[in-house]
Image (cartoon, rainbow, N blue to C red; front, side, top):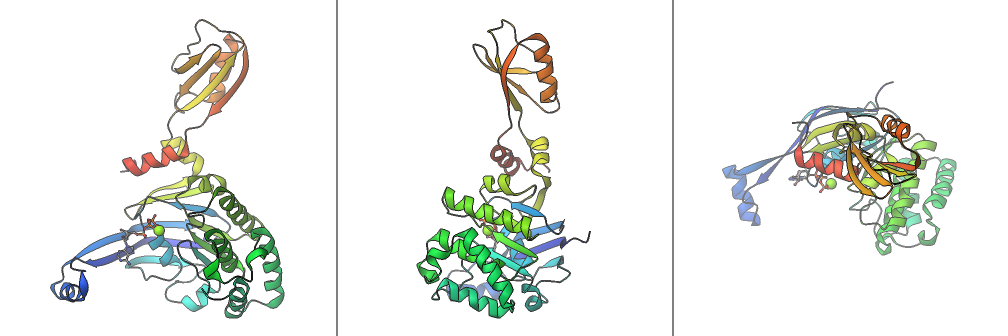
Length: 329
Ligand SMILES: Nc1ncnc2c1ncn2[C@@H]1O[C@H](COP(=O)(O)OP(=O)(O)OP(=O)(O)O)[C@@H](O)[C@H]1O
Ligand SMILES: [Mg+2]
């Protein structure tokens, strides 16, 4: 399959003047050449296949938005190659945007003073969406995103959650092949987040839209993405499945067993007993030690078991450890 996104050794450096205070300082900075180089994106390569739903993660300032801005053609790379949908985004921006959608969670792409529905109709015109397709998509998205209550409201009066739903609808009305979502759930409550996740899943599954999304909310990732990329300081630290991430960096798993009775010695070689309360025992074990089913069968040979459950390490902890330790260095 031809990848829909191909990024090779992509870099974006910003020059930040050290005397940026006030106009005089800025101008002097330009002449003296006193500046600091910010390596926002520093040599990233990856491919995305059509139909994938990929999470692009990293701590604040990691370079996520900068990458997305290059992918949407808003920024010109300092170096490296970038092909999306067979095009170079910044070079062919006009033809390019007809086939992509983008939501930048921290600012709306809709017209501030227009009612939502007028904004959407303007977009239909700009993207030349055939009327029938526009109707069909609008009807579908209106229902999924529950837009009806505020279709006639000017964008500036919308709540954050409503605005995000309107923006998502706008980004997808023209049936783009792929959509870039930069923190689409930022600042939303649990219910609003869930509605937006359902919508993203729907669009990915039913329309086959490729999705690349950034978020700081790891439950977004757990619910949506099979594949995650983690960046920090402009470099890719991990690219793979979420379960692979757990396997490679995850802490230990736990098996919680309720025995039929309070056995005296419940120890198992190579496995730590992390807790014990009467007949309930918590075993802690690494993936390299043994599998959960090996442990369970070893236990059931010796004891009568009433109930058991496996606790996976928390994904949040796993990712935080990667940020903190830069494990791949
Ligand atoms: N226009 C700019 N001029 C100078 N520096 C910039 C510019 N845009 C971004 N940067 C810097 O580049 C780095 C990466 O920023 P970016 O916005 O891509 O991070 P991010 O991963 O999206 O972070 P966050 O999670 O906070 O949104 C930061 O150090 C930021 O200050
Ligand atoms: Mg950002």
